[in-house]
Length: 81
Image (spheres, rainbow, N blue to C red):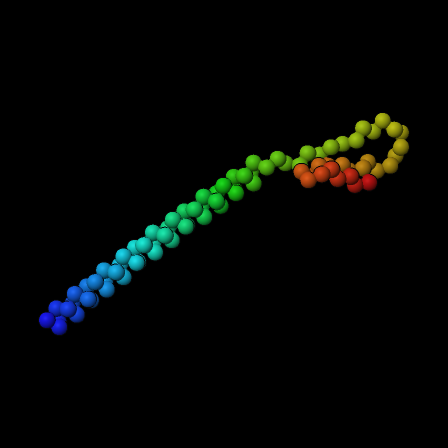
């Protein structure tokens, strides 16, 4: 009777361990899939961001000075004189 009980408890322990292993592995795969979706989404959204547009100044004056560089980096207009 003692050996049957220990055999049964061993089988229950092994079954419980295997169920915990399967649950942990599936949870890990689900989290890895969610992280992959977020990484791919951020890569696509970074690729779709507008590129900075170079703005120029009309040079109607006869001055021989250096032309100021003006551009918009997406956060505001930058004027380099």
